[in-house]
Amino acid sequence: MKVLLLENIHDAARESLVHAGFEVETRSGALDEPELIEALAGVDMVGIRSKTQVTRAVLEARPELKVVGAFCIGTNQIDLDAAAQAGTVVFNAPFSNTRSVVELALAEIISLARHLTDKSAALHAGVWDKSAKGAHEVRGRTLGIIGYGNIGAQLSVVAEAFGMHVYFYDLEDKLPLGNATQVGSLDELLATCETITLHVDGRAGNAGNFGAEQFATMRPRSLFLNLSRGFVVDLEALRDNLVSGHIAGAAVDVFPSEPKRAGDPFENCLQGIPNVILTPHVGGSTEEAQLDIGRYVSGKLRDWAVTGATTMSVNVPAVAAPTVHGGTRILHLHKNVPGVLARVNTILSEGDVNIDSQQLSTKGEFGYAVTDLASDLPANTEQRLRGLEETVEVRVIVTA
Image (cartoon, rainbow, N blue to C red):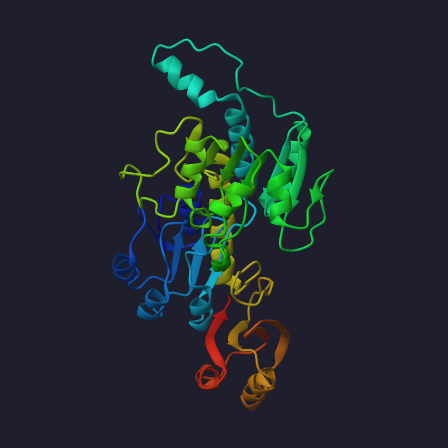
């Protein structure tokens, strides 16, 4: 199989896939839609990070693309429904960079509370500004976390160890860790806490959710952080509240529009404002996180190719398919309607094949059946399976 890795994915991914026998091409930077379509000619798997958009048009133009590996947490840059309809499996790394994002968030909270970036800039300019004015410890202060997923939950634990009082708001009821407290509404969180940090996912419903109304509800002289998704926050509204002094400081790691490649120019309305930390989407960009992501996602790509396993896929049913030797495995992705498995087995029985084992998992509109045979597959069986009205994709693996 041929693999294309984009956006400076850690070399551990390339090494893992080459070791598994794949042909691997790497490129730095992201590709726009026409560039990506051209680059995917003859490619079975693609690895991306957050900038490259795998759209329906890309998937329709390159039906030979079977797997997309998102070497990051988010998958909003991929049309997951279109991928599933095309039989293209998508994997991501939901846990690997959690700690790195948490540490950056906490570092920025402390830096904002102490005005460290302004102090550093002044000293670089030759100004000795030794003053405690406006500088605060984070111990005893209140932290409000919006989104209590993997990152938000771990941040609550670490922040509490620093002596902060942690509150969080999530659309779902969540089990609080440590002494964290879940509040019933976003307005309650904003009115309660001195520091607000966003850790929401990339679902479309989150777009533009944090704007002038939410900043007005925040306590005066609060701190604000966004390390989640750039399209969630109205940055002009944030700028207005920073300039007015209602918000005392902010840290932003993600932006609605981001350069595709390192070194490209960047312009934003928050540049030049005191006590504002701007970072180039580096929340998960540590050597440790990128190494772990490279190993994890490349392992998912390898396992899918070798065994058909879809465990932790974000768009198709999950099946943990063990390695088999000396047999034939049929992987059948299909529309989740009654009777599909019976029709599959009818075709197999008419070919006089003996089924060793069979697994079926369903998820929403799709089902995924993994069938191991003790005999070879008759010549026309795969064609007949593809001919089923409900079939999305069929793949046959023969092992030595």
